[in-house]
Image (cartoon, rainbow, N blue to C red):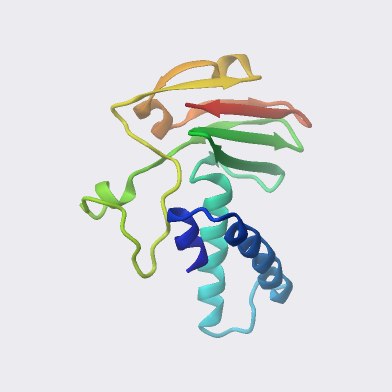
Length: 165
C-alpha cells in the first residue's frame, strides 16, 4: 500500500519508511528465497517486484544478468538512469508504457488492488531527448524506439548514465 501511495503522493518520509521496511522484509527471506512456504510468500514476491519497479522507474535491461547494477529516479521532470556491469554487456534498455491504457483500456491509472504501479511511462507517439556519457545514447528517440529498447553496450566496470527528458 505504501508503494502505491508513494506513486501518487511522493512524501519524503514515506520513501524513507518504504526503504527501511524492504530491508526488514528481505531479512526474513530464507536461503531458498521463501519466507515460510505459505501465501505470504506471494505477497512478499509481489512487494519485492513493486519495489524493483519503483527503483528502476519501470525501465529494464534485456537480457537481464545478475552482474548488472541498475537504478533510475525521477527528479524535476527528468529521468536519471545508471547502469553498470561486472562483465561486458550488450543488450537493450527497454522503457515501460501506460499499461492501464493499453492492457486494461482504462482512462486513468487509478489505484487498484494487485496493481503494479506505473512510474516513468513512454508514449509511443512522443519524442524523448536522451543525454548520456555513452555517445550512441545521445539524441532524440521516438517513444516507439524506447518501447522496443535502445542498444546498450557497457564495458565491464564502467557506469553508463542517461538522462531522459
